[in-house]
Length: 114
Image: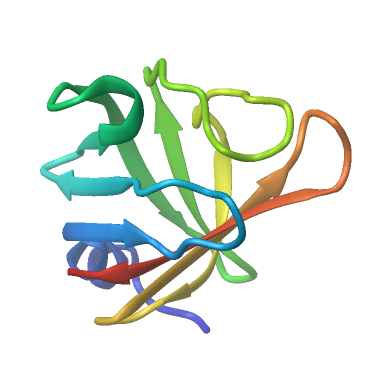
């Protein structure tokens, strides 16, 4: 899966819609210029949470680091999104990220590019 940091940054820029499973609700993430906007319209209307992101491309695994967000995510535990996420898949259509859940196990999110 090795891609350069520059290529990963280029691929992640844009608007991503969370793929919904079960009773999850709509959520949209927008990555641009090192900033992240997260929209959860069912909870917060038209307002958005904001944070920052960076990409670290290592030989073994690329990571997406998210910082400074305050919204609670839909994964068990209701934690914020502020984690170092492994990039499982990233192309021009799909973004899949995973991290260790504070409650144990793995939290995973899949997005489709808008």
